[in-house]
Image 1 (cartoon, rainbow, N blue to C red):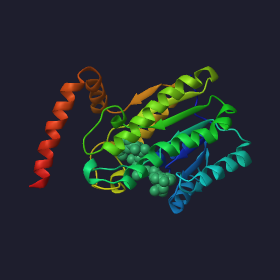
Image 2 (tube, rainbow, N blue to C red; image 1 turned 45 degrees about the vertical axis):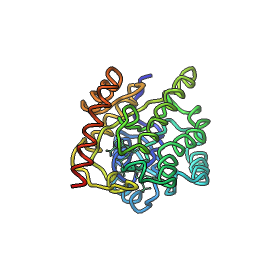
Image 3 (cartoon, protein in one colour; image 1 turned 90 degrees about the vertical axis):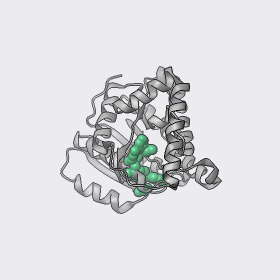
Image 4 (spheres, rainbow, N blue to C red; image 1 turned 180 degrees about the vertical axis):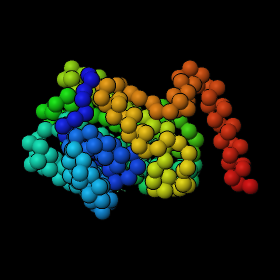
Length: 266
Ligand SMILES: NC(=O)c1ccc[n+]([C@@H]2O[C@H](COP(=O)([O-])OP(=O)(O)OC[C@H]3O[C@@H](n4cnc5c(N)ncnc54)[C@H](OP(=O)(O)O)[C@@H]3O)[C@@H](O)[C@H]2O)c1
């Protein structure tokens, strides 16, 4: 369904930096009311101060989204301030993990799955009754092109985003009869703090879309009630090749990865 993004109540996760911060700021600039969530309270506070004169409002709660007691606090907040009614939930918080599976460990894969997948799923579960009370309600999950096409050296991250993709597609069909939209946005490489906080293999990224562009495109997808939006032409090409010539793509990526591994080892 098409919706206007004005005077709506949105919960946005991962709003202390990158894409989530831009999503929150752009929603507030359009006159919406946002509950911004992340662990770094000072960042959320700064954002709230910056948006003081905007037409919408920003409130925040700081906490770890992988902890169920934080979900209870979020629920209490929405009950108290929004009378138990939420118009939109954007699950954006996430972390990366780069490196070969053989050199990783159980803690890393669980950490990635906890925030990129389970936190989103459980927050949807907690807020579903409130979303059912909302106006033109929508759930938007921020996935990745790596939730459509796999990449060596990122097995844990791919697993979390493929899981989120499958879950989102199934949930969309389940909620369609209730007029509750479920949107999947899949960005490609985006300039943010993401590459500084990856579990291992951290490297700063200077290529890719800006977080502001990704947020703008995501809000467009929400406004139009799109099923999914894959961002960047490179991302769309990768996903298309994976669908039509998966063997060819896999061979090309494998040989690129092997050359890369040899180069890195030199
Ligand atoms: N950057 C890219 O190239 C790229 C590409 C495709 C998809 N994505 C996806 O886009 C989303 C946003 O990434 P970004 O690029 O904006 O990265 P970012 O700048 O690192 O932002 C990540 C956000 O997630 C929050 N977060 C992480 N773990 C959390 C936890 N346990 N509890 C609460 N909040 C948590 C962080 O806040 P605190 O640290 O303050 O908690 C931060 O606000 C992610 O889901 C990512 O997978 C990114």
